[in-house]
Length: 182
Image (tube, rainbow, N blue to C red):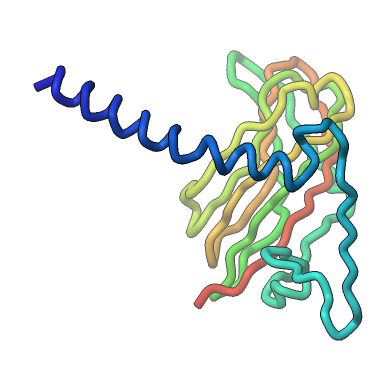
């Protein structure tokens, strides 16, 4: 069975190549490719016949987007004590009914913090989403692209843990947008 397939495939491939050979040389002669000379192509459009722009999406195409951009959010982070880590939390926003929040960027820096840094969503006191962010924020200023979604009713905030024996702080900004849900 395998041999029959190979023979038929080889026959079909040969027929296709034989039929394409004259087309290739005709194309080369017509375009000047055979002689190695390039042919200039001129495209002109008028205001009545503009170049079609297919697939471009602009902010005007997404009227349901409402931007979110915070000022610097100051997060106080408590010190670790008696083997228990400290932490800090600062709410960013509560997502309105019939909307979703999409966070696309977080930037900032921390001082005197050693732990982890995350976006967190809560609804009725229960964590509904959690996204770890770069730990570099504890030692330098960082700018992080993210893609984080929060649903209607969720409170979204910045969560910072700390294992240092002294309290610390973070200054963070968040940008994104709300979209309407059907």
